[in-house]
Length: 343
Image 1 (spheres, rainbow, N blue to C red):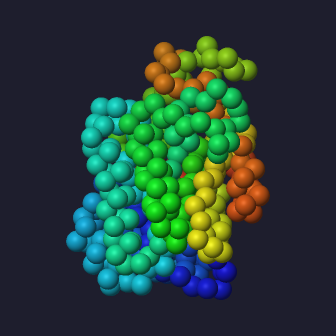
Image 2: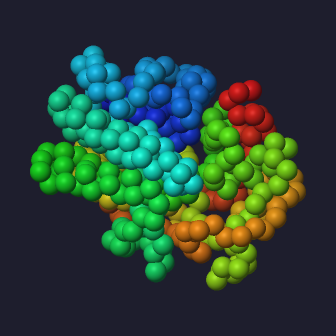
């Protein structure tokens, strides 16, 4: 997408962790941004921070992507050029406990969105998918043609959406769709104004580490130290959230060239163990992170990291920030906002 061509972009889930960083990148690239979010796991304060960072304004609509009447109104009242779809539920453990809710929000919500887009003749979509669609792969690194096999309702809901979008494109090749499979987003904006602010107990490693560092939590649980890895702890591909957001901009440019459907891994191609991540955060923060080793979690892979070459080749995108920078930015955000946006 030529950067001098201003577009109106609908960002579903735009007040959330990744969505808010996406809004910064879109506004800085000169686009008009419309956010739809139900604030179930986010805060409108993140959008106020986005406007402070960029010195630009966006439009916010409070609502649920499953609300067909609301979606119809949003598309009728705005000439939307493309949709970046982040809205959804994302906790693996919660998905096991509440599978139907996950299928309703993640799958049904997306189908309602597609229906509204179709009726408005808006056929450009970037979908927030996940490396969980691969399940537990037998070989590393993970390529886009690695067999999928999600092992929990969260991952399966993402895989079902992917399949629905593939079938949609097959039935109507005028659609422009990018399926972006994220690895492990971490980090925060360099300003320290926006970052990851999970409700309740964090599900992901980095916000848990940072909450221990800032004194909100006593210690970190390390799930297993007997994996077949250099230090026995699980190895993951951590990607800076700003790198991730910039990958979406590149995906929009890619889709602007011709109707197509593209599947891309967004990761660094590097794997770091839990203990390496802890050490990196200790170096960035000057704090000691207390942790205890507990039993493995069912379904956790020993190692998971991306082969990002397809995105480098076809999107002209590559991750720029290393683990040290990720930790520095997380710590800056957490130090400024010990209790997240509730501060």
